[in-house]
Image (cartoon, rainbow, N blue to C red; front, top):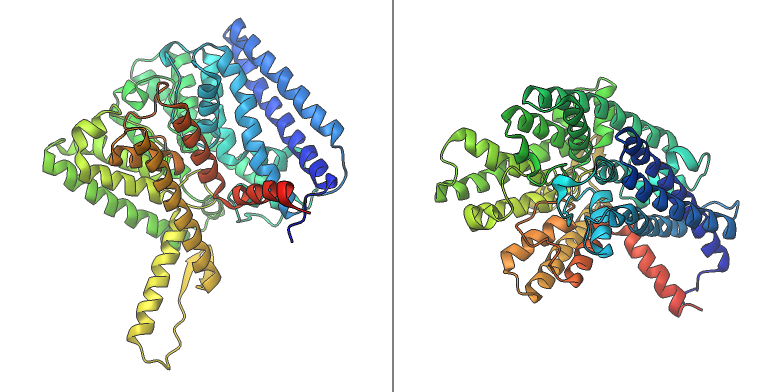
Length: 500
């Protein structure tokens, strides 16, 4: 028998959701400060309106649903799912007021794309967007990459034993430190430290290629926030192509790779454990997968003679491959070139890279390298069982921060999540085909949305059907949360409607 959620459940969910919404309102103060520095009064007014609405909504939830009780697993998962939807809607208000998004749905698409570190965009006339609104677009991935609920864990949910439920609900299950709140704060420490270094490096490069210092460091901060958090947003409509700089592209590649690595892996390196670089199954699988997918892309491009020179193949082919595999979405070509120039084989290699994605407990999306490594190990184990005598005991283990024995529950979990992603990719492609787009293009765009990549072959546009926009929003949301909290809220809704 399905039990209907109690009023107490709704109060607890509403209270903690309200706290997270108040955290979002605090984050909105940053673009206001920047807008005042640049004396952009209309954008500051847009964000002031957004902050007022967000604060009112958050305070009402905290007041009406006030409770001192902690979150259980179901409540924590539901809070996470709802917080991303609420953040999408509330964060879209100042963007829509700017007039650079034709519909409010487009502004919601933008904020969901940002928070989920996807990078697909529906902005109009990006090159004339204010510093204030542009900064908010890039701050979204920096918040979402670490996790919207991580804000609450770091600053608002001090001492709550339910913190781990919220942490896991956002697709993370590894604690760097014994306390999950300290883990969240360490993730912010890593991110802010890298942000400062990355902004300085990109800013200096920007000045060297002829940009004004203010613009150079603003672009540096935006590119780093979106690059490290594996989103594809850029301050200009030409994306990374705007800079026309090999050095800038090389640095961006490094940022994308660093951002797609496990935060636990970063922690080990910070603690001086350099051996983890080649011992870890995830980093090794990541390297092998990059080489294999680039091999497919290179063969496809070579067949068509698209980039005959090695430097062109690196800047156009390899850059796009790394952007796809790290699920970042930065581009040094125009969207339509994927269809007009690349050919089916190269496009297939890029789709595979997007689908596989980066590392778990990182800002990257996709199936994740640890799951791919576990499935490969399971396949090897099954082959050994076939080859070896029946009396032989076959035990496989792998190294991921520590030595781990390959158990059935790990294999089952990896296969379940992998299957869920594949189904999500296919469902999005079917919706695209329903609206008349070719199969390969539909699969490309669907995989990009569901794996939180942000590369586009031209389908994502303000003129595409509203149903397709909503489909991509749901794909980005489900892909970023890695399904568990999404399944929980679906079960919660069914229990609310049919429970007794």
